[in-house]
Length: 217
Image (cartoon, rainbow, N blue to C red; front, side, top):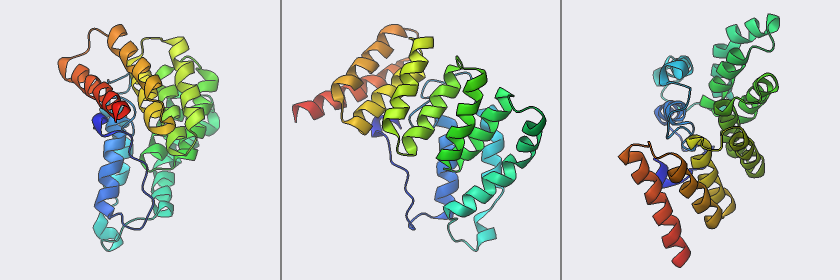
């Protein structure tokens, strides 16, 4: 949930297999917890193939043991294989590049995911949803400044984009400890998106209150 802040990716051995699959599914639906609180052009159905790739590898198939990052990458490579084959004859296909990026992002291969999102943006630089996903991958790969830069670029194309503003606030707060910057982004989000539902407004307002409380303490 967004009011829990950005949870860093855990790579330690404490992960259970089912936790990995659950986390990946959540990543697909909410954009790694730092994007898509407000649904963009991507729908859950569009992201479902990558989720299916994870769920098809049942924990029982690994003897109940957690998958390593290498195993998760192998899963991603297998799922992406037919898409990569299509890319050989159509290397600038934005939708294919995005789908491959989604698969690698879902399996926590953030560097690989970022490379495919970046390639898609070379053809379609104004694609704000893909740029937001690129920012998420960069953030989880440890490039906080790169993530912020991508979100700022996205906002140049669409200054009112709710996902970009929401992510920018979270990354500034959690990644840069910049509470003031986070407040600016979230207040602009509420101001420029009056159509937001009550629960989404409440989520952002809760974050604003959390930052203000943190600042006072």
